[in-house]
Structure formats: structure tokens, C-alpha cells
Length: 218
Image (cartoon, rainbow, N blue to C red):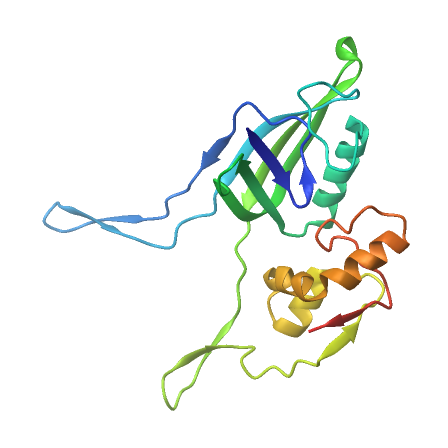
């Protein structure tokens, strides 16, 4: 049995297939003697595409966490994920085994098709693009050593969430790398989940929903 997760969202019906494109950025150089050589470079970002059924009724083959939710719920959640443009965990889990796929992605393309003949079930076409965080580097001209620009960054012990903040923006502001937001969530999972429940949400979706005034440990 396979389970597809986008962020903390379990798709109710596992896609029957998906495509994974791994882009190669190696350069080919032609030498004066007519031979060619390949110069390996950092691999390009992976792209994952698939179609997912979002049922309007509960089918025997569908799976839900926390009870049945219709297709509109999942379509709205996916739209929200794309609009916020934050990195998401993408996992494909095999029953009784470790994750076969586990990477950070952003939703690159998202489209929906409603089928009136099947009770209004929604088919969602999704393209995910691998997310790769970055940090600027500086060179010490005396020693020639290279270090990240945030090596000497002074990080407070805690900070209060401001209006419009996300874990990504907080991580970017204080760690210098928004891609480190999962660390921030792990350190503050209890308080983040507690606040989500106070706002009538079943969960924060791994820190997607945080609230002004919440104190986060850095």
C-alpha cells in the first residue's frame, strides 16, 4: 500500500502512477583534437508530476486521517499551499517500509477537473518541483577559508510571531535560510499545534498555520 503526503496532507486516493524527472546539468566540451569531455555540475532540480482523485464521497478504497473530508476540502488546501509558495515535504510511503520518496518541494503547477458524471469528483493534476535551500558565502581574504554569511549571526533565544509571519520567513530572518523552517517547527511543535487547536484547526499542517503573538524558541 502506498500513501502520498504533500506537507501534512494525506491524499485520499493514492495516484496510480507518477513521473519523476531528474535533470542533468553536465556540460559537454569539444576538444581541439575532436574528442568530447563531460564536466559534471550540480544536478538540476527534480520535477514530480501526477494526477490525484479527490472524491466527493467516501469510497471503500479511499483513506482519511481524522475522518472523511470531501474533494473541495483537499482542493482548497492544495490551493492554499500553492499560494503561500512555501517549501513542503513530499513523501511517498510504502506500508511496512521506509519512505521511498522524501524531499522538499514547492507546488509548481496545479489544475482541477470536476466530473459531473461521477458525483462531482475532482481530479487534480499536480507538478511539484524540488526545493533546494541556499545560503550566501563569504571568503576570508586572510585565510582563504569559506564560511556561510550567517556564521556570526546573533540569534535570540526566542521571538514572537508578527502579523504575516510564516515559519519560512522567521527561519530566513534569524537563520539566514528559510529552508531551515522544519527545524523551527520541530523545536516548537507543541506550542504551534496547541495554538492551531485554539483556532479550531485539527492541526497546523506542520507549521503552515502560525498565529501572531506566539512565542517561538529559536
